[in-house]
Image (tube, rainbow, N blue to C red; front, side, top):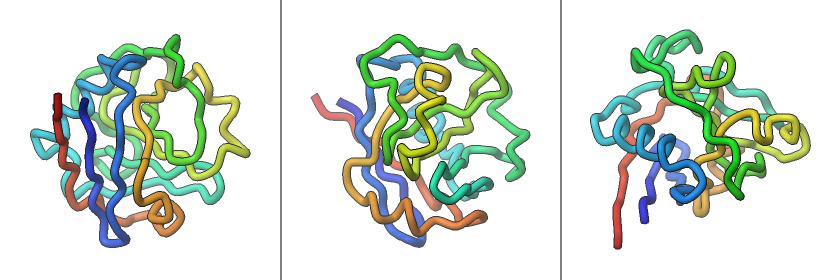
Length: 146
């Protein structure tokens, strides 16, 4: 089982991944995190009551890792509830490194099965509500257990 810690100045969010439902997306995110790709990037987009988005190396929502990954939309956990991590994209199969964390389910039902849900914050949910646009992802650490 893979888990992660997303470290910010506002606190730590502990994540459990949906490896069964989105194995390719989980692998991509974890590989990038292990390389330090996300370290020092910002949450460049924060929409209160909706999502906070990070993972853009340009800090503008226009950058990525230099490749695209396929969406994985058929698994059982493809619902955008509070704390869910999901891949941002500019159209189906165009994601790469940008991801968002759902702030509230109230405005995200239309994202279900359109964006790949690949994990969920299981500890540190209050941190989500404290993140502001421009806040830094200090580090993402991946943990693997059998």
